[in-house]
Length: 299
Image (cartoon, rainbow, N blue to C red; front, side, top):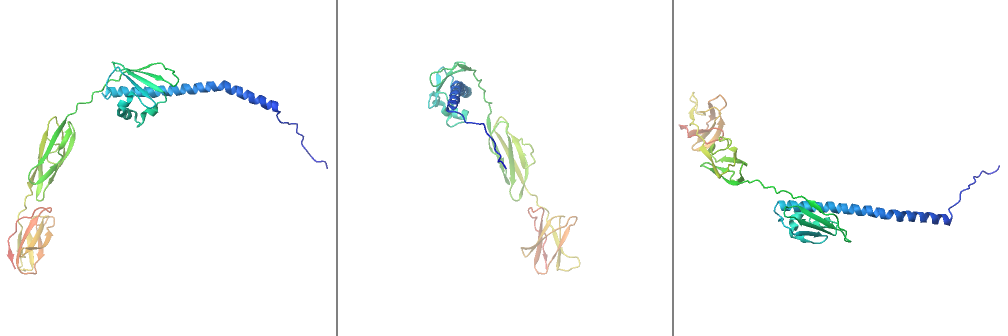
């Protein structure tokens, strides 16, 4: 059997052909490179113009805020130093960069502040090319609102304390709070607070110094309970009569031995009295101050 084979008619490039192709590519590159370089230069200059315009706006804002005075002098910015150094803290704050001079790629930028506040700036690139002069219109100064501050003095009467004193802007809503001491309760505020009967309220600062006072009063004492041995004469049980919901405190020979709460809708509570001695009682409401001692019974 005869072997199968494929006949190829392809052949490689000759040296003359390779040299011709390389020459054509070189010529095309020489033609295109200046154009590409020109586009890059235009883009760089446009970026510089935008950056310098940003500086002009920052300077205008600084002048409007009186951080840079109006003048006819020229302010110069270069890649490393310039007259804007005098206002470095202002420029850093406005430009948001701790090294703002590195933001500009141009060799030099010159800002001329006119008497009316407009800014003319010129960019001079390395090699002496000078751009057209741009004019940045003045920024009108915005006067800050005239806000006055006033003193608020928050005082308290006997039986508690109060907080909220300080110096505040006119119109500020201030939170004030009153706290009663043990045995006292909050009564009211003296002064134009939002709610004079609430210990926690607010006060709006007027156009003058103000004083408000928290007032307190003693917690009223409940009446003294009465105690007696049970009706059947059994001296082992003491019945105390008082207010519904009050806590009765039973004492033996001057020492408290037990406390019980009178149930709702009831008026008395009973205690076991196994020990001999002198019994008496007091009552208190909502953990407040206790009433005076009741009558004394002897076992």
